[in-house]
Image (cartoon, rainbow, N blue to C red; front, side, top):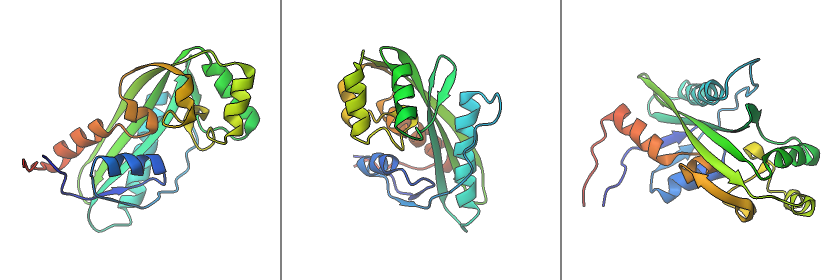
Length: 197
């Protein structure tokens, strides 16, 4: 059974990203970046998530003398519109109504920065289809508080699972960290040898 040897520095306070690393058995520590996440005018979604992932990783890397820093940023896109985290109940309702009964994309930018070395940046896309939700179902879901702090106003690993009809692509990407992509980037970045047991 293989295992990962080098500890990552996760430049994110997301409990979901930490949980994914934990489940994968990848040692890590958390140092939150705290960068400006404002979307630039006419910035495409892919460029946006990659820029933020890189900015988070680089901001943390500047504070360290060595290590491999992981930055990630996730957003939801429907009909060309980028949906970040909802500001309040009304904003969450607006987002959920946009997603209701439709396909959308979840994009996560991933950046790995070797302190004093190279930077690798990539992204993952997953397609997700929501079932038709009634007004009362939307109200109930908002009342759980789960939409807040999540791109697109939903968490697939939680109660929103009740309303997801179909997924095409990486499930972990929807949670906020496409772990296979991280693994591939890290292997390229570090020439890590995997111990076979």
